[in-house]
Amino acid sequence: MSNELVINSTQQGERIVLLQDKNIVEYHLEERDNHFTVGDIYLGQVKKVVPGLNAAFIDIGYEKDAFLHYLDLGKEFGSLQKHVRETTSKKNNPLRKISTLTLEPQIDKKGKISQVLSRNHYVLVQVLKEPISTKGPRLSCEISLAGRYVVLQPFSNVVNISKKITSKDERTRLERLIASIKPNNFGVIVRTAAQGKDVAELDKDLSSLVEKWEAGMEALRTAKPRQKIIGEMRRASSILRDMLNESFDSIVVDDKQIYEETRAYIRTIAPDKERIVKLHSGKVKVFEHYGIEKQLKSLFGKSVSLPNGGYLIIEHTEALHVIDVNSGNKSNTEQDQESTALSVNLEAAREVARQLRVRDMGGIIIIDFIDMKKAEHKKQVYDFMKNEMKRDRSRATVLPLTKFGLMQITRQRVRPEMNIITREVCPTCNGTGSIQASILISDVIEGHLEHLFRKQNERGITVTLHPYLHAFFTKGIWSRQRQWLFMYGRWVKLIKDSSLPITSFHFLNKHGEEIELNN
Image 1 (cartoon, one colour):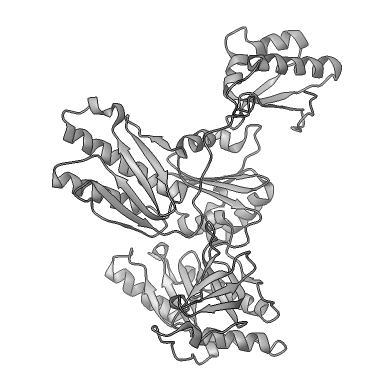
Image 2 (image 1 turned 120 degrees about the vertical axis):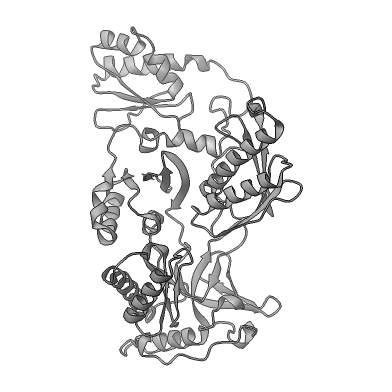
């Protein structure tokens, strides 16, 4: 299975797409003004303690106070708070490393928030969930720093191995290695990617995380409330950190700065993979070149087609997501109803797993599969769905089908659901339902061409337009495009852009700059 990462830089931020075998499996939008990313660590200030919820509301600079529950304080909260107090109060003294500290007693897991926090206290917190809907961020005091092979947990001494590493010998080897190289008072979670890696690679990853923590503690000495102490890396880099392996074929970027940053990051974690990072410099937009725009439009609608005739209907509510599976014209292709149901349900299970990743749907998902009578078929669909969900980087729980053919899935929700509007308001009628003279759009384009060639003596003109208009101008041996060549003695380059409405177009000069037109 081939993996490709495509990054498109826009004014709003970066659009990031992960392709597997040319199909979109993850889509992310990293907004430039988003300052509250999962993993960011802040110096927060307690604004309100609510004993009834056993929680506190913390000010970290968001318009709504963030939520911190007692159970998210972590057992080592006492050690964390003591270190924060010492670090912020002794600004001119040498910074004490936590490996030299004596840890405080663990807090009672059945305790009360009012026993450990009060109004205006400073507390070091990490974002667990980004702001969603009307809610502020969800916080935790169990600080963790993720690397490629390990996750570092300050104020702990526990070594845990990923459950996905099943070999007993490998688990024992990794546990011994980490125990021998980790500093005192740092816990470590060994990630699946560490399987088979030698001590040098693991030590390098671990050391970089310790350095990151110590740099954050140095910043904490002079930090003010609501200030970010340690920031999570860019979304694209975190995807590479978690997923980069031998199956990655290419990483394509259309922005020079992000290209250099991505190459520098790849150089540090996998130097042999630096060659797969490429800068897209073609006239055609990078998402258009890889057919991503068309895929996005087809993936985010209310109705999603399955390869062999069935389709899904996806509805979203405040409490949960509901997905209905329909056979469509598939019903005539199998021998009997049971075979049809099984075939469509297996296809639907694969697409549902993909939709959850692409849309980043979290919370409770209810899937209404087509009814099947045989128990072995129900189990087959359940096992197939569990296997498909293993590729998902977010934690998920899949329950067997009920007697009514319903499957329940819970999926970790850490950021707002991704959505793309696929129903567009007509740019000509503005949604009124009536248009005038849109058929003349080709005449408008040709009028602009004549003016640019005859009056302004332009050369090297490129026009980006909707695929329908592109086909209209290029169809046939004696196409309109060739006619322009004979009329003006200059070739006009036409580029398809399916992100444009049918009545929109852009003229570019030979330097790739947009030409201002008088409409």
